[in-house]
Length: 385
Image (cartoon, rainbow, N blue to C red; front, side, top):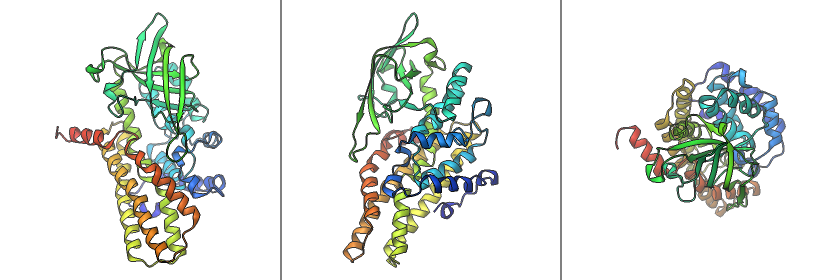
């Protein structure tokens, strides 16, 4: 399916990686049903992540001196594209490699870089993100979790919610208030590295509509952290977290979350030799939109790889990608209903995959920022507000 979307060329050195990744996935994903592969970047498999790390494919674009492979952002794009298009279970290392390690490399001390980043690249250290709170949601400037200075470091009190894989992670990077009040908005926010084994931390998984437990609420009850838990400068958390979110909002996961379902549906159309013009038109519409979004995502990757912070562009990719990703399962469901009414035998595996993606798709417009917040960022970036 990727070839059909490859209207935006990538450097030859990056493309040369694609064959090795496909052979690796042929072996690792053999026999895995599409409804399992559809979980992809929420599929937690620590062994799979360690296997990627052993091949040097975690931290592919991170510096060699910190355990990375020293490749460019395009090589990582190819790797991520293949992993997501095939539905590889990447959740264990995903946040650590995509956001946490780059953020530590950009803002952390030398000691923090040496301690955390090589372990991330080996697939041995998993991170969760401590941003959203029950009364804040995507409005991160109103977070209330507070870190108070002590003689030995910081005392943390508050709560985070919708924290992906917190119950499986080793550490969290938490956005907290170190001065001022929620009314001060962006001023007074900082980021802290939190070892999730520290006394005073309670993690409660949240079961979603699909029966999975990816998300957790995390409570901090007077948690004592050392001085060096602070990442970057005190009070610079807002600037740091917005730069971090550019990594989260612009990647291929924003256009490939429904890809396993789409490919399974296309296989059904081929197997049934469907000549339904509506089905073929729908397939063309989805491919056309994905090709455009892929080109936009590549452009954002190029800008970020050159050292930029493409917040507006990343927000645009995420917003448009969410629209397509939520449209896809609903449109496929309508087409399959028509096909079944006409007597077609729809495979059970396809129906299970459709059921999972349909149930999970509403979260696409929550993760990484709600559509309302993103459109506000886009308007501000375009000078419209």
